Image (cartoon, rainbow, N blue to C red; front, side, top):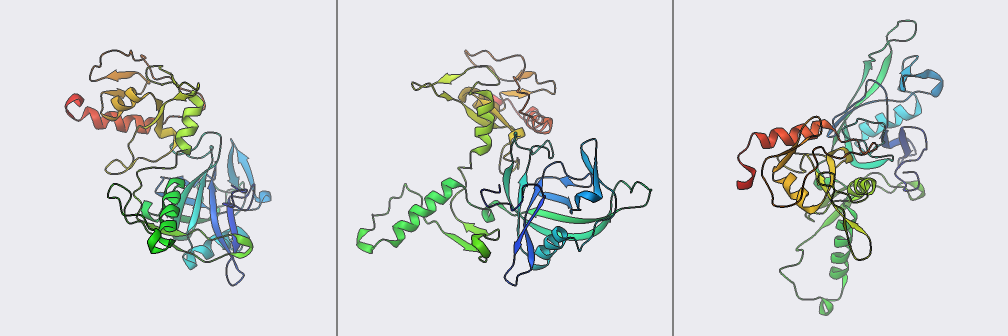
Length: 332
């Protein structure tokens, strides 16, 4: 994240840079095994501010404060100033965060959020002497998809269309009704010192049918292209395995599933379709329940799992309850 210019520090959870007037404003936060008062619900986040290392200690791996936090502390003041000035914040999740959304052994940039409220709150745990501890608390809400940074594929499409629009009129190709139509990408945001940029919003009319595949690549890499449901491993002439990343709780309306590793399975094309149409669902003990038959291709009795791939039962239960409440999947 540091090399990608998405965060300025290797350790601190709050990143900041200089605003136009020289004052410090936050541009990013990291969710990675934070304080007990933190709460991550993907679209909304409750985030605890920062404290010097000398004012906190870890208990069972969770940071515990020894004394109250201060709004004067550099990181907290920068994050509050971003709230006051309406700057958006990049949210980065690490593998020690909420199990429903954490990536596999890495950090992942998860988009732009706005700070909706700040307050002084009382921590769940008191100080060692029993006195209440005051914390700097921030509420954040994820911006809608259309205001998020475009994916690499969307950027390529936009760049190609912009190049086409910049050509002299006589060089313009005739419009093809089968190609992507009118695409616009408008950017807003001030230039920060030393080449850094504040998080930006973009109004993109590129249809978001293709998503950044980093999450799916992580899952497929762990399973080496082997289907978790049937064990099939398709290999092409070049020796490269082919598999598909299947979202358990589907993306978009009405399901609103997140694009995160705990919500993705590595499946062969057939099992991917069977999952998507509810022909198979998965029980809490990882047993595969067949709801509609298929000729050929035996399924495993239980979903194969990898110790690093933490599939979350919330998504398994959502998928199962959604389809068990519907008609015969073969008629969908």
